[in-house]
Length: 398
Ligand SMILES: [Zn+2]
Image (cartoon, rainbow, N blue to C red; front, top):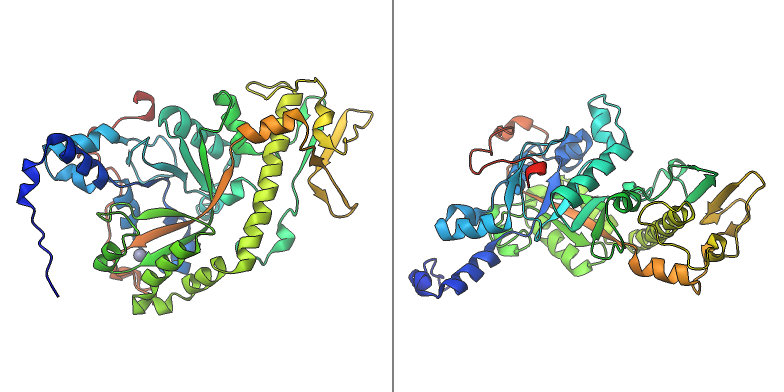
């Protein structure tokens, strides 16, 4: 086989704008993580991954920042080290507002592991404020359950709410609104079409050798984008990740990951995600409707002044001002759906954010021991170690 040359001495002779374009192309497109996935002990055990190195690599400056002055300038033009003023983090992270997605990699279970009781609403609020206002990110991502309950294992249905509903009475509104959209609307003006919003339906760690990962091209040109989001129905791409996973024979012992791949490639998974998306869309619309009815800031106003005309059939209000709106009430067999011919409904559908369901993949090139011997992986110092490379700033200084 012909060996490819790894040298290209003519690079310096290229016009400067071409060199800059090449450096730009070498920048990673990252899923920058707020938090560390391995804080959840269950994930560590299921995936048999004991390393924090992937998270650190994902948070470090891009590889090309260390090549030369010119490439470093390109890296600094697009990204910056930011301090995370937040409880659950590994320290400062590198963030490229226009290139990266800002991902809330946190579920309440992580806090329970530590015996902490956390307020989900506060977590979401701070994430949205940090992402949209301080980091200038227009691409946000968060675990699916923050939008609406989703049972990945499809087992514990008794714990799940089957269908969304909203209850209103006078000035009181229950907390069953779409909290992400509700937070957007407090801080940003309409419309919300500029925001790209993803929800992660499943999380999979891929263990493989570095050379295999580079050859696959799935984790960035230079392997410095070890976290990736893939559309839940992009079968071809998901199969490419599975092929990379299967390439390493030691992964045969990672039975949980094998199960996860079968699950996310199954038609039943896809139909459940579609059903989940319909519920999220309904809840997003119902949240916009409550905001409009209450005339809250940045709401989409009713042109005809009649909030009830948005529903088909029109919902009934009880004498005391109480109203319960169900997407689908199984017991009494009725639905509260939006009237698609209503001007407010048409406008709201046009300008509300649409949630894109994704699968989150993470690359680990460490020799994490599949038999559970944690000592196999050298420990990685993981706090306050990355801030000596570039100046570190708090969000508020951006
Ligand atoms: Zn690992």
